[in-house]
Each structure stands twice: as structure tokens, then as C-alpha cells.
Amino acid sequence: MTIPTYSKITGLGFYVPENVVTNNDLTQYMETSDAWIQERTGIKQRRYFTHGKDTNASLATAASRMALDRAGVTASSVDLIVYATLSPDYYFPGSAFLLQRELGLEGVPVIDIREQCSGFVYALSIADQFIKTGMAKTALVVGSEIQSGLMDKSTRGRNVAVIFGDGAGAAVVQATTDPEHRILSTHLHADGRFAEELYLKEPTSIRTHKDNFDPEGSNVVMNGNTVFKHAVVRFMEVINESLTANGYTADDISLLVPHQANVRISDYVRQQLKLPEDRVYNNIQRYGNTTAASIPIALSEAFEEGRVKSGDLICLAAFGSGFTWASALIKW
Ligand code: COA
Image 1 (cartoon, rainbow, N blue to C red):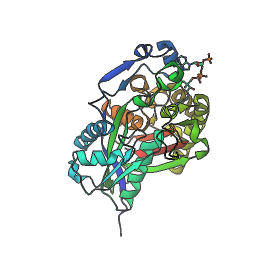
Image 2 (cartoon, rainbow, N blue to C red):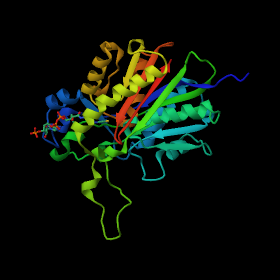
Image 3 (cartoon, rainbow, N blue to C red):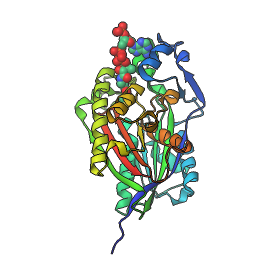
Image 4 (cartoon, rainbow, N blue to C red):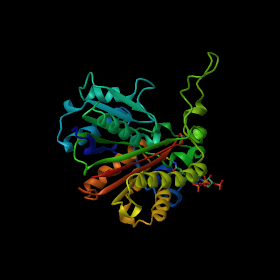
């Protein structure tokens, strides 16, 4: 009889740049206020990278080393890297290659994921499928972003710039035969009809030789109201999908770790699911929205704080540009 292989997260890590940027700091560049930002988003501060010191891959490397340490495995055990980011160091090749080089893992396959705020859950799902089919045994799953350079930090771009921050998170995902402690299921969705509701146009390849780089297209553009309305619906759908697929209800969730998009979105979802505050993790106050990095940073911090324990039912849920939405249900 063949024993089924599952996957489980065996180590978590994160790294954020040292440079703390408060809401008041942003008032140097744009007309905004600490009160407006906190009331609309919950954010108090975020981290920005330091030019010449931090890169997307260097943040990812630091987060990955912590995750590997905590899993008690050496980098040489890793046989797959899945790396989610919307802000790679180069247009190509992806930052997964740079992380692989830093870790000395020549020859190991790397996959770059571009599903923005849902990127980490997509990456986790891919690692889970590779492990379940025997294609990999120890995967490094990473979300890393340096987004502060992609924002228009003048008053014109304030609806976007105040939200996003830089950082990285990582998880070591390994094969297991233990059905009690594993990733139960992952659920992925996308709807390209809304691609331009939250997007970055440049650098674009669809340009004739007469056109120049469009500076207007080199900042993130977001229709915040539309994003908000879709986010609250899709978060609920994809969380319920994961619960139904495994025969659970919201009441069974030990900790919901949502993508840190906006504390108002999190609160809405929490109320709909009738979960008490201590069963939904939020750290957007400290880091802003770090896109693909937000779930692994939040999960790492929750773990450090003792809020993720053996036997807990952990739900990860994300929504973001694309639109994309995704969830993972984990029996820790
Ligand atoms: N500081 C001060 N005022 C600001 C501002 C800022 N940073 N950004 C926008 N404003 C102003 C607007 O100019 C507008 O002014 P007006 O009424 O004079 O025209 C007013 O505040 C309201 O703007 P609006 O965009 O309608 O605000 P909002 O209540 O929708 O909040 C967001 C804006 C971005 C916070 C909100 O739409 C949101 O959170 N959307 C979801 C975003 C998200 O989660 N994105 C990530 C998805 S992964």
C-alpha cells in the first residue's frame, strides 16, 4: 500500500528593511495626515528599502535563512524555490534566480510567481502540488517586495503610496506522511477582467520603436473603491470554499491570517465570519501592505507570538491585483 504524501510548513521567517517610515514622515512628500491614513487603512508605519543596501532578493535571502534555521534544515536540502513578487530586481530573470544564487543552490528549479497579493498562497499551492506528486521534498516558498520605489509619492499618488511597504517572508514546506499536521487544501482564483483596477504599466513590451518609456505608467495605479468592494466579497468566498472543502465551519478556525490589505477589509471579514478579534491576525499597522510578503510575514510573527500551535486550524486568505484571490487551510 502506498502511503500518501502531504506537505507541511516546517519553518517560517521574515525580514523587513530597517528604514521605518511613519505616516507623519509621508507628509513631507504629499498632502496627507496620520489621522486619515489610520482611519482609512489602519496603517501607522511601513518599512522602505535603503538604496545600495537592500534588494528584493536580499530581503528574501534573509527571510529564507531564518525559515531554514527554524525548520532545522540546511539550504542544500531545498529542491524547489517558488518565489512570489510583483517587484523583482530585474524585469527578467526573476528574483528566484538571485535567491537561488545567494543560497548556493545551482541546478535546483526555481519558479517565479506573479499573482501580486495572492502570490504567496499561489506559491504555497504550487509547492504543495510538487510535494504531493513527489516532484519535490523540501520547497522554499517566498514572498518578497520592494514597492516603495514604484509609488508616486506626491499628492497625486497618495491614495496608493500610503498603503504599500517593503519586506519579505518565507516558509520551508516539506513532505510528510502525517495526515494530522499538513496543508489540507489550497484554492486559487483569478479574473483578468479587472487587470487595470490595480496595475503597473511600465516597463511594457507593447511599444513601437517610436514610443518612449511612459513615465506616467511607471507608478502603481489603483481604483481603491473597486478593489475594496471586490476584496470583501472574494475574501469571504475563498475562506468559505476552503472550510467547506474540508468539512469545517468558521467557528473551527483557530487563526485567520488574511493578506494585510487594509484593516477595514480584515475587520469586515472577521465580523462576517463572527470570529473574535484574537482569531484574526493583523500587523498592517507596522508594515503596511507588503503584497506577496504580507501573509508569510504575518504568519511568522503569529508563530513567534505563540498564536500558531500544533493542531491549530490556520486559514490563509488573499485578494489582490489581477484580480486574484486564494486561500489555504492548514492543520498545524
Ligand atoms: N491622504 C489624505 N486624503 C486622501 C488620501 C491620503 N493618502 N488618499 C485619498 N485621499 C482623499 C481623496 O482625494 C478623496 O478626496 P475628495 O473627497 O476631496 O475627492 C478622499 O480622500 C476620499 O478618497 P477615496 O479614494 O474615496 O477614499 P476611500 O475611503 O475609498 O479610501 C482607500 C481610499 C485606498 C484607503 C480605500 O479605497 C481602500 O482601502 N481600498 C482598498 C485598497 C486595497 O486594499 N488595496 C490593496 C489590495 S491588495
